[in-house]
Amino acid sequence: MGDKKKREKITYIDDGRTIADMSNLPPRVGWTKKGTTSSFKDIWRTYWQATKMMLKPTLIAVGFLVVIYLIVTIIFWLM
Image (cartoon, rainbow, N blue to C red; front, side, top):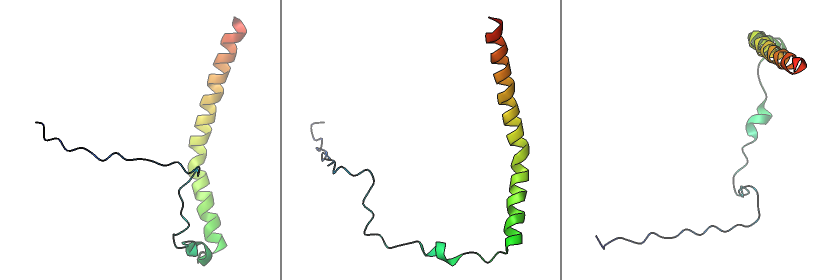
């Protein structure tokens, strides 16, 4: 029972930086320069399909917030 090994105490040194130093990493921005092979029409169609999919849930969420706002307004107006 008395044979416990001491754990090495880790010491962290604050050098004042807010993010890790990543200056030694190779640049990986090559994928942004390649662009896309899609046409503008395909990109526009994809954008509108995604927008149409999110329109109904967005309207439901906004409607819910409006109803909650009206209920709270009426409650405080009657007090």
